[in-house]
Image (cartoon, rainbow, N blue to C red):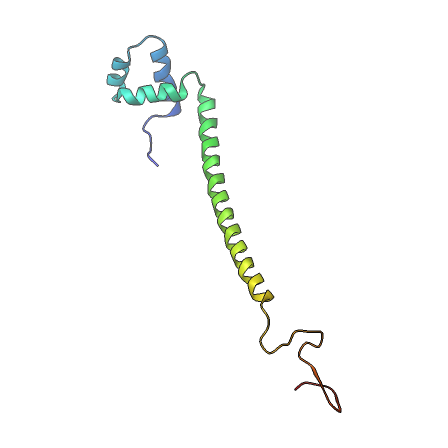
Length: 117
């Protein structure tokens, strides 16, 4: 993330000067910044107090963190669904060597009760 060289207090000071009638060109020259930066600040922070700026930045950081967490949980959920789907397919497949029916692999041979053959 790009680091700013102006503090919140400096930004608010420059914007107050601009609201007070100081021309934008003069402010840009005095603070050695581009007019685009000044107008971007005005669009973003115009009319805000310094405390609101810091609160807004904290909320933006929390939003980024929560989005990252959501993406991680969503990916884990998809992987679990995929694994569960494969597991169900394996468990529902007929087992090799087992016959269908109530005996579960046991056969009754003549004269021998319940012996596996």
